[in-house]
Length: 347
Image (tube, rainbow, N blue to C red):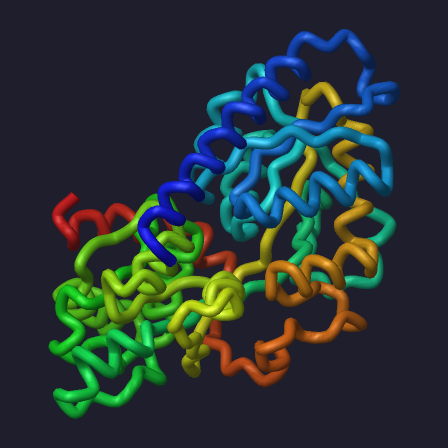
């Protein structure tokens, strides 16, 4: 990815936010009841290309117009919470369910269980019915093959295959990852190491890895463009986003290491919003097989439906070697873990 392309992508994203803000304003001034409205406002942690097809397909299938704003997962949670007294969005979309579990006790969501969720595994839906999982993503290591062969291979280093490989001192200032304070993937990565190694050894691992990290990015997908453009050799991010960039022809390779962790991507209808009926229609729509298949095809994310095959280029989810990840504990301890992490890196 050339720098000019990166700038262009940033401009497109900025224009999208401007349009979304306009859409939010229109929704705010509308006097239509939620049952008669043809509008839906979404705050999302998904990427621009994800929302492009979702917006177009939902309009085609239902006649409902979507306007949206893009956030990192951490900023998405903050935005939803800050507007609870006067919601400006109808749906929270994307980001791991840990963020939804934070907001749920505060009364952020409408209780709604989609009829399309009845056959799903219990781990993919809130037991109380306030939010819903609709996709899966696994954490990965990735590296720029050209930069690796140029910088690290001559020193006798082999490509990374495990989390522990990243501790090699030759990765110093050549590795980027995301900040757990702002990125869902960044937090799940930190929790992954604590569950994988235990609390004490996990923090020792993170301290040692910190010596190699050039900087921590705001979003979980931000390291991908940095590595794809050759600014760094390796990074950590969601495998589906890395694979998307790899399929575009960039010299990067994705590796799903053993004892990795996964996210359950969430969706919820926001309480006291203006278009609740449409929000429920949207959740129903997300869980249909055609939409699940398209999401898998376009985004490379795994589906929550067992009848939908793994994304092309990804190993089946059943073959991914997962860490014993305690999602409830990860949610309960998130604030304290992030505080300790920030102290560790001097923030």
